[in-house]
Amino acid sequence: MPDLSLSLDQMKELDENQCLLIDVRDQTAYNHGFIPGAIQVDLEKILEGEYVPPTGKKVILYCLKGVISEEAAEYLTEKGFEAYNLEGGYGKWLISSMEKEKEEDSAVRLDEIERSLRKKFHKNIFSRFAKAINEYQLVKEHDKIAVCISGGKDSMLMAKLFQEIRRHNKFPFELVFLVMDPGYNGMNREVIENNAKLLNIPITVFETQIFDAVYDVEKSPCYLCARMRRGYLYSKAKELGCNKIALGHHYDDVIETILMGMMYGGQIQTMMPKLHSTNFEGMELIRPMYLIREDDIKAWRDYNGLHFIQCACRFTDTCTTCRTDGNTGSKRVEIKDLIKELKKVNPYIEGNIFKSVENVNLNTIIAYKENGTVHHFLDEYDENR
Image (cartoon, rainbow, N blue to C red; front, top):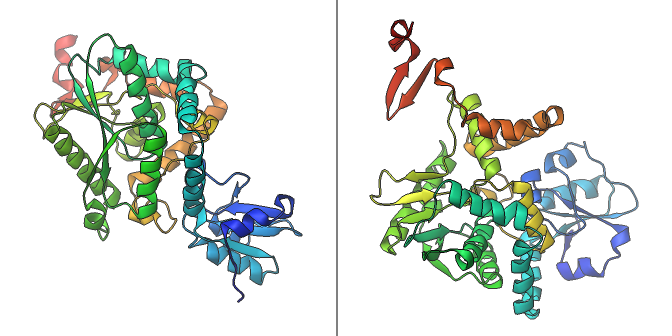
């Protein structure tokens, strides 16, 4: 088998009209960011012969790090196609793109990004951020909030929105932009730091070894990882004198959680806009992105040509999504697809799901829990005749 590797420099020298660039990562990863001009095709569809590239073009394949896309390049080569594997994959391209951005006028770039929140995305993003803060009373005078940044689009946007709203707010509060490194590889750490610098977010980074701790866990590693990360964030935030941590969950996360609880947990519940911590006294969790749609976050990202990491856990280092052994990651993808299909029939489905947990009629509920106590409709059934 000849050497099928192709460097970024070599790819740039090729005629774009003569090439077909294929991203073999899953649709979720592709939606988080891709090389311009690339189409998304699942690796399995290529290896099982379900997808056949058009003839007469050089086929260039990539994944996150150029690992599993090599297999696809070898397969297509054996089938008679001129196929190549992009060295370093999307990750290497992303770092290279960021290096070029450093050569640009960073002040002008930052001004354009911030202006987009004040102008183009004011209604769909900034106003909804402010509405959630006011409606759910998420920020109060003299709060010190740890804005938790994972490196993805949601948390990075949240950080910028907090900076923006502090300019307008009528009372003082403090912000700490907190980045926990649970064991990122070098590429992901570099992407986070580069984006923070570009967006003028003064991050405070602290390190843990959570990925090492959960790497060999067979049952629900994603759940365990999430719990551990939350605990470390609370602990560090409290150490820094904060009384709140802010997470970047958005509107779509909320409605997906409602359906997941019903379909996979057999319960009606929602992702609350704020919660008191049960393990860290005096600490509170807030979700100020609660009313912002994910499509609007993507639109802001793409309008400004920004690139963020998706999921940086060890399981995705080899270009797979989170394990498919019943974890919440794979179930959430299923729910996303279900909502998308339901929306084709009822365009109001998302709003109805969101409102369903605001319009609970206890007279039509068989049973419900309150502070751990189960209340059954038969308890007072005869008394209410």
